[in-house]
Image 1 (cartoon, rainbow, N blue to C red):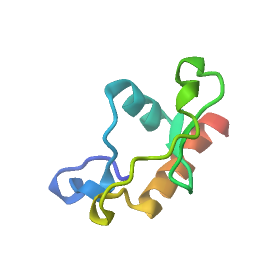
Image 2 (cartoon, one colour):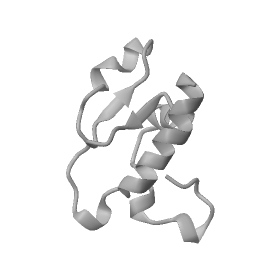
Image 3 (spheres, rainbow, N blue to C red):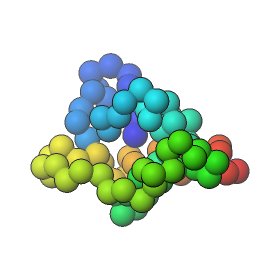
Length: 83
């Protein structure tokens, strides 16, 4: 996912609707979306462990997050957490 940078990045396929705490975890690489569109939670976050493995809700194709953007975000952010 590309960080918000004005109108050019403000599109449905470049975002996930998350509450503030999950959004912070996502931005820091402690929550990510795997290649099967399942939520993954970093080890040691017991409070959020019940979310691990849940699938994203199905939405219209034109409203789904871009898979390549999700993968790039995951690769960049999760590497920071797990090295």
